Length: 290
Image 1 (tube, rainbow, N blue to C red):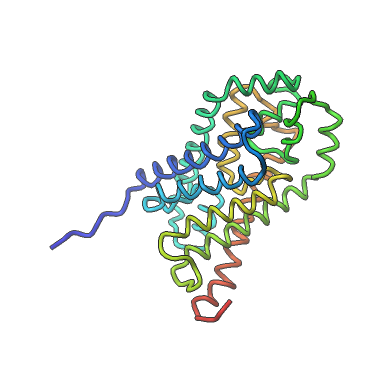
Image 2 (cartoon, rainbow, N blue to C red; image 1 turned 30 degrees about the vertical axis):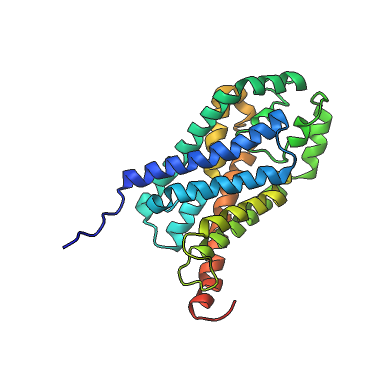
């Protein structure tokens, strides 16, 4: 009599989340490095599609082991709204943060000369005002300081203040919340085996990746488009340790890193998951055309 295959252990699942999130951040933040530091990309879509491909690769690599959450907001939503064991939430999130932190460390090692050259060209000192233009390669900032990093002009405080006035904190919060809600709704839809309009088996990763690419194309000019607390906080923590200090992690002076990039995605994932599980999902399961 053949034995049924054993389920992955918690250690194996957490290791898979480390590897999957590492891949996601290495490729995703990697393309941000090349765009900001070396003008290697021709537009936002090239950055966005690399993020989408990174998510596809990560899901195909580890999805069969851990489910490829790769995102604390999705892990929390899956535990709250589906049957993911709540006892595994903390371990999954720890693995996701570790994977993101390690990927940031490797990217810093690879691109350290280019980071220094960009700071010199822009006339800024790492850890001081203006060094957001290189810190954005790791953690995320609202408003997106990418325009300040472009071109040959020196960093100007007045230009940065003008940019900040265009994206107030409440708007950044709303953008991240609704962006993550859309992503979560799609994730719940394409992974629902009873959704008769869903993708064919094994293709959910493609549509999740394309959803992220589309969202980045719309929201990145405002907030850099996070939707994932691990993707932001792991690299942000690394950059704070690596010399950006309070620019990367401004404790007590600017709480956008917490409200916009951690709290908003968590609430957004719950909103999107609830939308699918309570309204759209039951209609699919009842055989009613949505």
